[in-house]
Image (cartoon, rainbow over the protein chains, first blue to last red):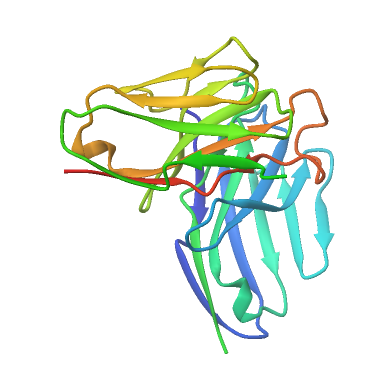
Length: 113
Length: 118
């Protein structure tokens, strides 16, 4: 199947610092790259996404950058807060799969006060 | 608006038992999906239904069957449960045909069914 590699698997930062999570994908045909946040006991929720015709997108403290040539995209969280602590998943759209997303293995982010 | 509702929330089965995980969405979405989540493995697609009346295999379909009962409901069946099927199962849905991934129409997930097979 198509793969996406996500790093790091765990990340601990102090409140106020920045956090960066990176994903590398294999399907060059993919044109949609979302990031999901999963809190304990809940399903994942979309926090930001980007399409392949855009290099960067921001939404307040979060941003996503995409390098289609190198096939990687990154999530950036600035001024982190304890409520940012969660598991984050990158994903990309599988070709010919009814809009199914292929997910990375997740990054557990801990923001300490 | 309940979104995506999964039942049951928790289930314990013995090896060889069967059960059906239920999923329903009230957002008039066309496409529905079943994922399983295991520690360190992320979310892996089991089956999906791109539209009512169609189903297709995902990455890890072995040991499972699905039924798209109507537009709202998509069930996942384990005919003979095995310990390897111990996992958290997530159902998700999206309105096919919109600009996929636009912030106003993301893939919506339920809160999961935690299944243990002993």
